[in-house]
Image (tube, rainbow, N blue to C red; front, top):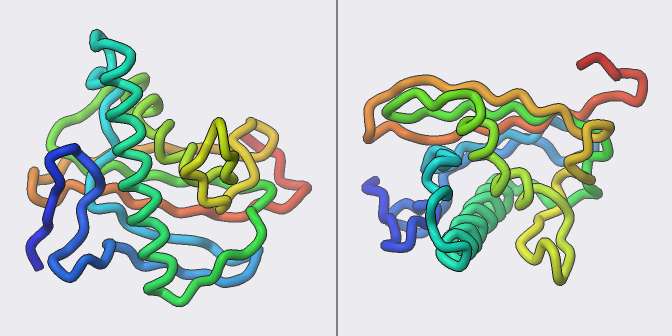
Length: 168
């Protein structure tokens, strides 16, 4: 199916309006996996612009991410369980060019914010898959792979960690 992209840079959906993604897991100890139709943005794409432009673009991207992740979870029949207290977040960015480390890690901020719990004022698009992004609760592993422009995407895996797992 052909992808449809909005002119605002929101996450894409297929022609049927369904988000890409295979979400596995129903319980609090299950691994959650999904694939987003776009690569995470580069941090450089946000710098040097007026703060209002950056803020508005970030809101549009977060809204697209939230819609795509929610659709993938519902399509897979995965309900909304309690947020995972301690998790390892594995993100693989497939994009047409390689980003340097700071752009790669900074570009996933909008995605991580969508995964955190919703807060009416500070995080209205939060889905509550993870309890928070503090180092004591979340270990992020962000990698990237070069691919053709038409195959760009982001693969996300949320793996629950036990209370005794403190290795970094």
